[in-house]
Length: 225
Image 1: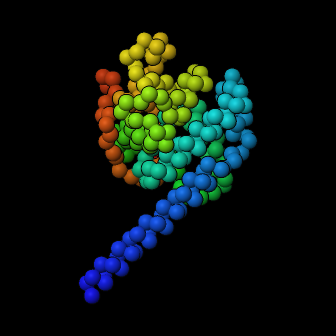
Image 2: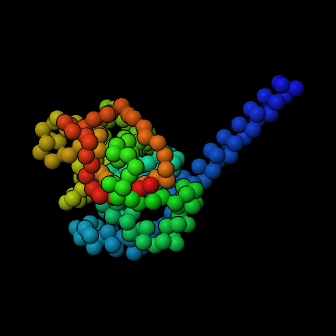
Image 3: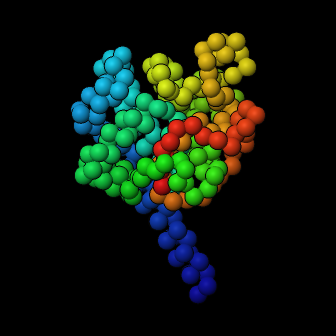
């Protein structure tokens, strides 16, 4: 009798796990194939006139990467590593019905966008950027603690010469990184941006617990919860 009960519980567990895995695959496919409203591209262009149509397509691809990361993070907070991608996210949210529908199908919940100062914990943005880095590296098959390149969402501000962007380097001690004005060491990220998305969750440490001399502050002014 006890054995039969255990077998039943095991079957229920693996069945639930299978259903959840299948659901996530469907959500990730939805994100990958989603077509953003063309007005979002126009708004990004207005903010950064130097961007070409190809550049803006890359921005929207990076925005999909951000939603991918949020999906993989489940309900844990994820900081936004890019200024230009954050602008695109802002514009997407303004299409309230489309954004609501997207969140329901892509994440199974509404992804909020909240000021960093309104986050419940002082270290929330730090934890969120670490989480974003870890998942982005996993997506692009990059070793998170010794990266030889950057995931798209971490390199895009530099790649597209975004004036107010966040600049990362795989080695901030190198001369090339210093001359390029890199702000953050990819392997020692403490906090790069104040923008994040989540729907509630806990903090999570990482292999990098500090950045530079002081990792207590965050740039930017927006986040998610």
